[in-house]
Length: 138
Image 1 (cartoon, rainbow, N blue to C red):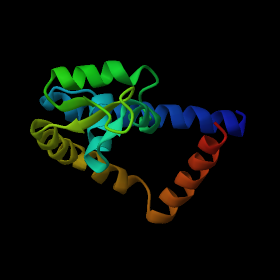
Image 2 (cartoon, rainbow, N blue to C red; image 1 turned 30 degrees about the vertical axis):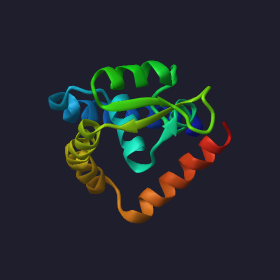
Image 3 (tube, rainbow, N blue to C red; image 1 turned 180 degrees about the vertical axis):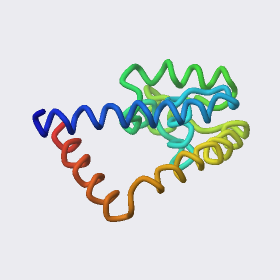
Image 4 (cartoon, rainbow, N blue to C red; image 1 turned 60 degrees about the vertical axis):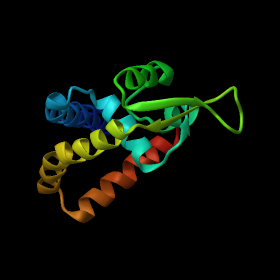
């Protein structure tokens, strides 16, 4: 098999397995992987506009406003017009959203621990560097 094709297929398979494991860990919380990713992004850096959130999301290729609507409906996110530009909507976590962020971090801990059993630090560095090089081309 072609080396590049083998790499691409291995990345896809690894991504599918990681998402499967993360999805299973999130089931008791009643949220999806994409929702968890958005909540964690907001927990790290808020407020964010819809566009800023959309540009940081890796797992979501669709419209971030639908995702934000679902999070708002669930009581996890506040939506308000931006103070700098009223054409933009800013998102911040509610108290419930901040609590959910903590629960997500706890739920993903076994996934991260599992990952640490697979590769050592130098292998993770090499793999991450390679994947960043691919991503930089997009």
